[in-house]
Image (tube, helix red, strand yellow):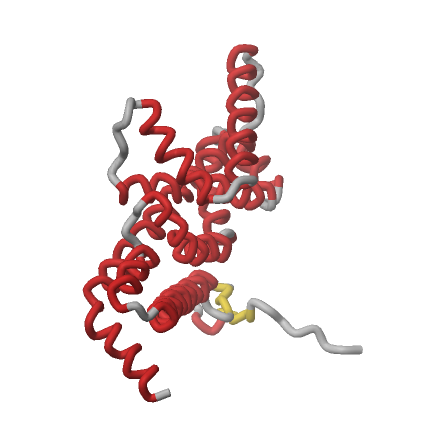
Length: 260
């Protein structure tokens, strides 16, 4: 057992530059892919929930875009990211006569497109969950659909879907490992290099497993703190008078209902 722990320590001490580079590329791809995927989800979610225009041409264009988005969502949610990586990376090479994209940008593109398909449904569900009275109230004061989305709906949606976005980020940290099939130098790729140099397969992948756990655990706790901050305080103040501070009433957000 002592020899085993010594081997683990030696792997970390000797190959920490590889491990740090792998962590950096993994977090870069996961973070960039999640943010770009969220933007894709916001764009597609707004388009799919936009009311159909009375103009015939615009109405037809909306239906066409909705159909394309629906196909995109179903295809990328229904196929593994590893297969998508092979198709996109080598498909580009086939289309350009052998030219390939840089590996790190390729990884970001693949993760972004995959994440965008999931985010599209998350955002659409978040928009649908908002009470229709808010749309009607905005329309009553003369706001367009885009103004309503920007100023009223999307701020609420972003707060409501934050747990789902955080979950996608954690999933992307782990799923970047599949990008080694096209040679992206993320953490799992460097684990293979370390294994071949040290001939210590179990010890190497145990170290990498612990690193993945530490990354996902840390990110999860940070995002939960952000969620808690966005929820605000446990109570709020109603000002009964602008001049008399004694007229303020502090009301708890969740009042306990007494049992009968």
